[in-house]
Figure 1 (cartoon, rainbow, N blue to C red):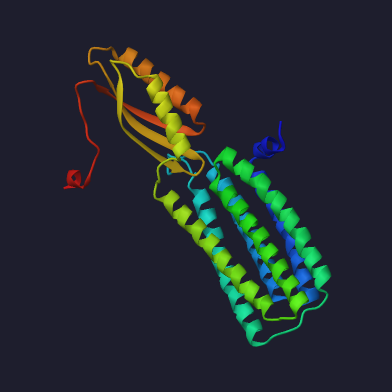
Figure 2: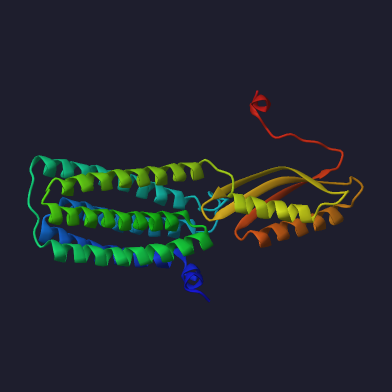
Length: 305
């Protein structure tokens, strides 16, 4: 078993707990680096790690809510709770970016020399190594479990790594050139990149809340299963899909000869449902049986008049 396979087996909730611990560690390292150097770039890096901590904690809560079974008020389950985690993380990132820009502009107006640059950069690089390894492992698990909350946290950590890399380069240039304005300029560039990532997370979350269709690879698996049941007496139409957190849903019509017994038709439908759910873990299939000579159409605005 490869390292990626081992990482993917760990459930999202466990990785989010680890993320909280790593966030606390990196906040301490980056805050110390900022305190030693006085770099506003390192301050922006520390502020983003603070967002990591809040996001991981909220993500853990939403993953717990999403794992709750369906009930009378939520017959389809609580899976969409993960989208709130991703949206919260995106908004938190955008707030952090605004705070970083404010601090950087203030430093541009009031330049300040940097101190103990070597030690500060060393602490920043060490924290980036922790974040990079954690983000890679979390992304493997997110893909296996189809967890947008975990994926959002992982991508945020990757952004944090690139943020730290940019800060290190900027401070290194300040040390070589003596141009103090490079430090806040790098911080502003970092903030703009963070802002872009935050906007992307909010957009993806909104798409999930609006019942976006399943991913292309999932759709391909569904189509493959349905093709395996193709027969002159059986056909499928009106296939619609949607995603909800870790769950996937497909609704379709299955046409059969009208003279088949209900038992026979139900048995074939059961086989199709089982094949679909085996091919796509976490899929819920709803199949409506119809006689071959009966046609239906999807509801549209005219049907509501």
